[in-house]
Image (cartoon, rainbow, N blue to C red):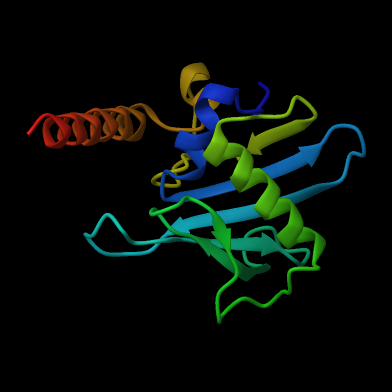
Length: 159
């Protein structure tokens, strides 16, 4: 079963809290694998830490490259970044997070998950869960949290 994410599932998967995503340029076949992990805590303004696979151990060989902050949803290098703006993995990260932010996906870019839930990390087994990269419980929680957030925003705008 293919683990390529559909456009409508990419953002939910990547920002689920504990995702590993491989991003491939289908024209060049170049790719990078990123781990995107939400900072711990209760506040909604906590960032996601972005790490890139830099070694042969695809479970442990990740290096921190930057963060995505909820305020503007853009990828940013930070003091702890181990790479410069010139690194190809940083250029790709900026490009893909901008695509996600603007909801302007390029057909030549493919997103793949690793067969684990992007939120809790459990192995995915049902076709629907594999398709969206989220297990049934986590997927439902993410969808309901999104609805709650939209209701709060609408209520604030109407006040």
